[in-house]
Structure formats: structure tokens, C-alpha cells
Amino acid sequence: MKISVSYDETDVAKALGKIIKDPNQEELVKLFTPIISGNSQIVEYFFKLLIGNKLPDVIPNGTLCRLDVADIGYGMNREATKQKYADQDDKIIVTIVNFRGYHEYSDYTIEYTGITNSGDIRKDTTYASSRNLEVIEEF
Image 1 (cartoon, rainbow, N blue to C red):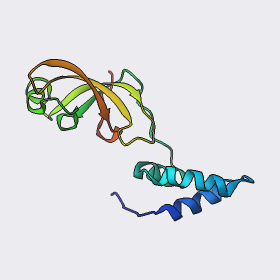
Image 2 (cartoon, rainbow, N blue to C red):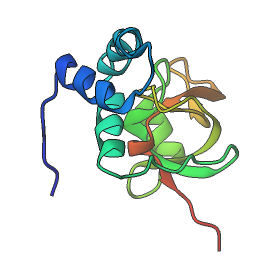
Image 3 (spheres, rainbow, N blue to C red):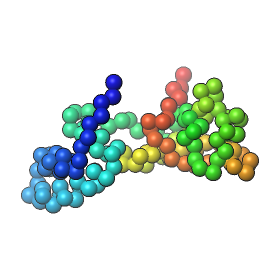
């Protein structure tokens, strides 16, 4: 079961004030509070780390994953790509190109083969969130 909690920048600043032990603490809190508060994904990770959780594992470059066709890049014909490349769950195979960082909503750059709106088949590079990627386990 997922629970939703709301935090604001004063909560982030208080938490930072408790973990930063430096003579220049006040300035460091002023610096990092808007950086963390400006991204809900970072806020979620930040507070999870404070209660003892770990960050998600990084999917290595070159790993094959499944991704819903609805999440592919703009300029691609989703319906045509689905018909030609998707499995029974409407997912296509993508390759992890690189990890962009925990600070990004779409934390991975991926590559896949798709069909453009003009009907051309080509490799496309776009971004995807780890929440939407399903790693294909090797046997």
C-alpha cells in the first residue's frame, strides 16, 4: 500500500539543518533546500534516506528492458510501433543508454526501434523513468 505525505520547503530545510553539521550550516541549508524542494522525486528519495532506506539500484548501460508503448518518444507513431514491435502487454524492448541521475524525473536515456509519424523505421533515443522500466532478466 502506498501512502502519500506532503512536505514543503520548510520541512526540507529543517531536515537539512539536522543533518548538516558545518560552521556554514545556515548557508548550506539555503543552498540545498531549493535544489531538493524543486523536484518531488528528490524530496521522496531524501526523506526515504532519512528514515534509513536506500536509493534504487542503477540499471547498467546496455541492459534490455520492457517499456509500455505509451511511454515512447514524441514524433513516433505509437500505434504503428505497437503493431510491429510490441508484445501482448503493449510493451517494447528498449536498451538503457545511460543513467541521468536521481535528480531527473526521467532518470534514464533509452534507445529502441520504432516507427515515425511519417512511417519510417528508425532507432530513437528518448528518456524514461525507472518506474516505467521492467528489466529483462537474463537466464
